[in-house]
Image (tube, rainbow, N blue to C red):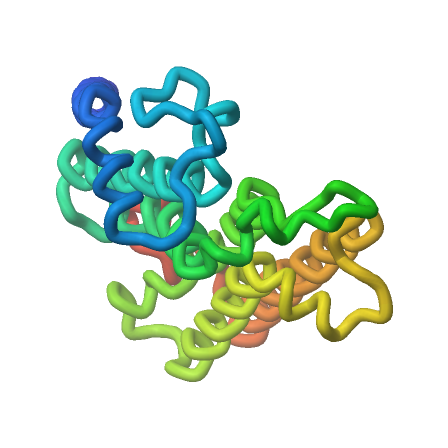
Length: 228
């Protein structure tokens, strides 16, 4: 118990230190991003040495800063808890959605706000949905520590988790398939529903698989995750 507390304290200290370093270098970092990318890093009149991210940073700037903080969070986990299956299992569901949103950063631009509804594609909203789906990747880790479990089971879990993680960050593509624009309250509810269906499908598949082989998830999970 004391070991865990010490590791958590170490994680907090490392994350705070790296976060402070990034905060002090946010101005040169922002100027560098503006130099190498074509999209706007700041809102009109915004400051590189910002104090309010919502007033000074554009949507793209907010996404980039959020990504850096998530990377710092993951580095802190790896340093504090060492590189292990546990630390990887913790940071992957956090990092994967951030990477997906960063790759589609132009879609979440304020240029894509629909004038009629004043609603665009929200990166935070998409991140949360993608994160929920990415938790499914956790079920792949027993493949590296246990001889039990079918190869195809892990492949199907990976595919279902990937689809669930990707769907929330491609709202523009889903929009093309709908008779109405997804950039409204109805569209957001639909995106939530689609993601939940994918997540539930994944976990139903996992549960049915374990029942079919007469095992529980804990039996195929490493002891450090609480398994046998």
